[in-house]
Length: 389
Ligand code: RFL
Ligand code: PHB
Image (cartoon, rainbow, N blue to C red; front, side, top):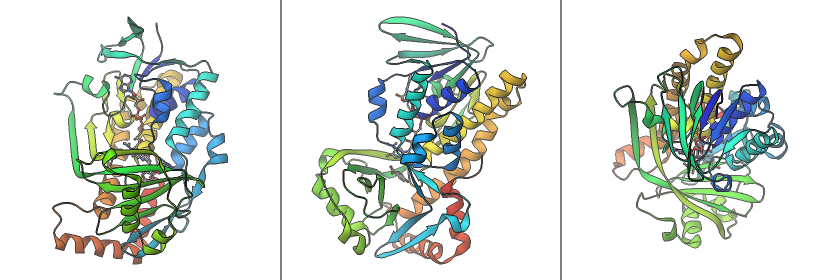
């Protein structure tokens, strides 16, 4: 089999790139390790930046998100019983959209299937061969048979645990990592959200986040220990702990119900450099991870897709390699700014096990500064709605 761009990974990065390339008549094949049903049951991101919305529109999948998504022009921060709002419209010209990653992925699968996109599921033993030559290929096994996909370029969109990043020789890449000493326990429940905007809560007992998918579906998170397991947390224990971490007024209003999903995610900041080796380009979680505070993971994957799509268009439509040659540099410049914001917001809002009383006081002083200082609010708002591409 042959294609122009072999895409490893059928998550949001791989699918969005594939659908965008299709709009320009550039052929791709997406190789996904899991089944489509498995990819669609992963509950992840919920907040989309304007940049991602624009890419979805360009890819022809921008209709449902504007119909069913919820535009938010502010977010709430609390500490103890105090709560204040960061107003996006006061400091930026755009809102964010609350719409689940699951729905983004569903829309993209639908579009790829409607346009006869080639998607291969349940591939295993994926191997990228000759990435540093002019004729790379991807070898993989499906239905027990070994296959070879010849291509011009390989897009490594296979997430943090994929094979693409590891294909770049260790001597040529450098990994930067920070692991946080806690995780997030997330619960999805068929209950109305406690507030119509998101609440990021700093409490003495640890961080909490009140988010949502729609008027009848809520998504809540609480900071938990790294050795906690979802089965250790009954629904009742989760709701009790969440109530203790958000302002009393919100706690009194919280509607609880049975969880329909409960999972724990560790928090990590990670970047690999460079994001390109020969004809292999890393994109999304394959190249970088942010802690979820600030909702930047999927959105940063989308900005990579933008730079890679632009580079591929340039080479196929104008025979100009400038965009591909500068892909890694351009993507990383934005990635590091997003890493900084996610690290800052995580550090501001969580309880660290070794935190001294002094450090806790400093944290509260910084939140207090943010509550009262317009310049600090503007910086937060601009980062939250998404830095320009
Ligand atoms: P994905 O989604 O991990 O997709 C990679 C795909 O590659 C497949 N794969 C392989 N396929 C073939 N061969 C192999 N060897 C393969 N190895 C892996 C996988 O099966 C998978 O289908 O990466 P992608 O596309 O780069 O997308 C990244 C986003 O999924 C991620 O950044 C976000 O979910 C992060 N994130 C959030 N991001 C936001 O922008 N806003 C949010 O509100 C937000 N909330 C979150 C989040 C992530 C979370 N968790 C669980 C990590 C909340 C949570 C709790
Ligand atoms: C979510 O709704 O899943 C969500 C929202 C905001 C975040 C992280 C996750 O910062």
